Image 1 (tube, rainbow, N blue to C red):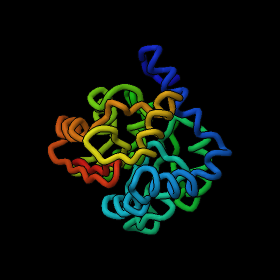
Image 2 (cartoon, rainbow, N blue to C red):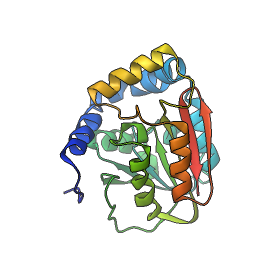
Image 3 (cartoon, helix red, strand yellow):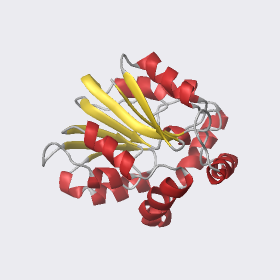
Image 4 (cartoon, rainbow, N blue to C red):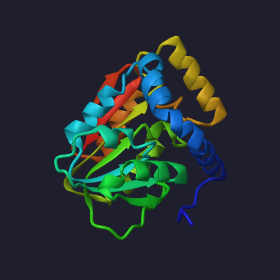
Length: 224
């Protein structure tokens, strides 16, 4: 049970978006999506996202929407033995990421972040949500519920950081525009209404301090 009541259309959008992450796709995810797509379609080479991790990741970290665990595998934790937790709706992602990061003995939680997150665990000093918001149904304002839900897991003075692909208020190449249109039509992304000002406004509504850096059509954000 996911413990959340949503409109049927949102449920279907979530199922469609997360179903994309099969094990065959995850096997080429780093090379294809974090490599070619980030650099040549989104205009934001993934090393910028890794720099975000190196700047904000703590020794007590929760990662949400984990993908393959690439950034957690390559980032510089401030300690050799961090407390690490993984959260995702897709069991394939949790399995692949868990194996990749087995050296840290991570905890794993299969949860839908659009609903209240009920886990019996101490809070975290940092929460990463890389490339997650654009996969969630709704507009940027309604997606703000994710920040509200995750704040309940964040310790005082903790930081939430991540990235998302934006449609409005950013420079988009023709390839990016086409890819956004196609992925939205297929249901893998829902971000045609997501824009830079909407992201900034939503962060400001939920946090006392926030910042957004734009590279290509990617918004890199941090908030506390």
